[in-house]
Amino acid sequence: MIEMTLAEVATVTGGRLHRLTEAEAAATAVTAVEFDSRSVGPGGLFLALPGERADGHDFAAAAATRGATVLAGREVDAPAVVVPPAGARDAQTYLGAVDPDGHGAAVLTGLGRLARHVLGALPGLAVVGVTGSAGKTSTKDLLAAVLAPLGRTVAPPESFNNELGTPWTALRADAATRHLVLEFSARGIGHIAALCAVAPPRIGVVLNVGSAHLGEFGSRAGIAAAKGELVEALPPGGLPGDRGGVAVLNADDDAVAAMRDRTSARVVLFGRSADADVRAEQVVLEAGRASFRLVTPAGSAQVRLQLVGEHQVGNALAAAAVALELGGTPEQIAAALSAATPASRWRMEVTDRADGVTVVNDAYNANPEAMAAAISALSSLAGADRRAWAVLGPMAEIGDGAAQEHASTTRRARDTGVRRVVAVGAPDYGPDAEHVDDVDAALALLRAEIEPGDVVLVKASRSAGLERVAAGLLTTDGLVHR
Image 1 (cartoon, rainbow, N blue to C red):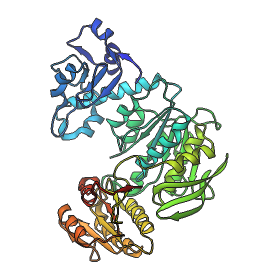
Image 2 (image 1 turned 90 degrees about the horizontal axis):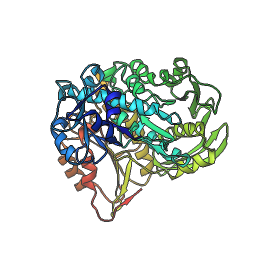
Image 3 (image 1 turned 120 degrees about the horizontal axis):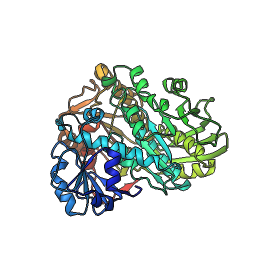
Image 4 (image 1 turned 45 degrees about the vertical axis):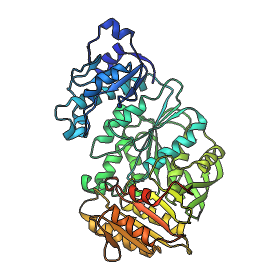
């Protein structure tokens, strides 16, 4: 973060000083923002946000004892900038029931204003936004890997992609930062547009339009409308090499490719299509990992991914297209892609037990498209000689077609050679799946029946907590992560 005074923070956020004189605020430096009072220190600005179990306002005094000041939505027992609740409607929607008085929403609104101000003071920074129904986090991680050799790059941890995560990540950029990579999520129309207003992107990547959150959006067209807000927010484009806006769109997804008509930015297409500007040729899948020829207007180079799953090819192409726009060469990009390893937990984490059982923890999220990709990767990892298990939980927020999609997933797994499908909890995966009540029952079944050489995929929406199944299958001894 670029250094500011607390007086400047108050001006930017529209807040008032509490337990501070103007002279004290002008003499107090702010060099970082944090939402955990245990993580702040001198120069820190603690964000007093409500949560399901505690309200950050109650920890303001603890933050102050560590040398921090506070950004609050109400008066607290510490020196603070208190932001008024006016204008906090979008943030209030995000916080919902945990913030009935709007105090936390006021803090998020102030945080967004602060992030926008800081980014405006960094004109040389390239802000890259990524959205899509699946693959956002993996692509964000690949972008961080391919851009890092080209200059200091800031990207969010895990899936920190909402009204808190976006400004918090943006504020980690400083004068030495060349690239800021942000992952934009949406729970409804207008959410991505609001995030773009906080952190305006110059390059926008749209990966795909699937059925994740179909229950909230109502149709695939509604999802496309929301995802397309990213390209609508881009500045006008120009010639390659200038600092105009660039929309990086998936040529293999019709709904995404059609977004070229919704932006004034220059459009770059990626994919396997012959029409793609950045494409993959000669794709070969071996033991779950893809290799391909990266073909670009600037030349070509060979890529061999360490990430598991053929779906990672599209994610890698999106990252390559962005890196080309920001000065990378095909050879540099191919080398970075080939060296990249999983950076966010519970996303195709592959671990070999000492007895030869392979556990694939992909339990962070699930929707029909992501399920299909994971099952394809499982089949490739297992090959013809190993027995494959799919341990599956619910796919949340996919609307009225949920029962059909769960059953279709089982059929897809059977068709690709998966020997055992274990459904955990409430979802009905159909008569060809074995249904167990909970994580403990799933673990009991697996421990009793898996054999050396088996490959076990664990996948579900995050709310199911199926990462506990993967953790229960693994011990600390004799494990090889790959």
